Length: 221
Image (cartoon, rainbow, N blue to C red; front, top):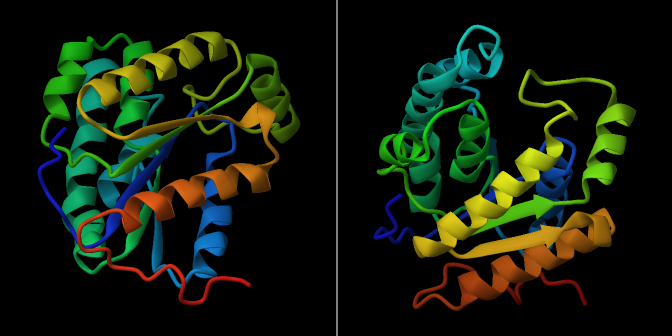
């Protein structure tokens, strides 16, 4: 991953196992940050573009290195067509899943770590990578309550393995200089998780040499 760019905007990724509450956190963050007049753009990976839709709905057809390459191809197209333009425009981009998820799901699919590293080498590093985790029992209960699956990568028989891989992913990203925030959502209400992430985003973005947002403007009393 490359981290030598400096856009006016701020790039935040949220990763974690299915059922941990990423989509809920992204929605909550968008509402929370709107109170501070932060221009937020939500997005997801695989993207909603043609390559992303192929990756999203092709997990029963593609696997291993083929799927890993498809996901990486979608990531680079996503960067070119949506992520970088939004960041250049000064937006705060919230991306539901990014490289950390590849470091988990592709490894679980039998792809060597060095191969995953190689095909994602030129992906832009996020300004903040948030990894959400929870006890395995909590995640299993949420998945069972939801009663639907988004594919073979979202099931409850490999949760313990995935949680271990997410710990590894956080260490790998930190070793590459990425700012990683890991939150155990089992210890927080969803609204508290959102507040923790929002505060981390605002503090980090404001600490940049030329912050794009005056966070006091529009802040709630």
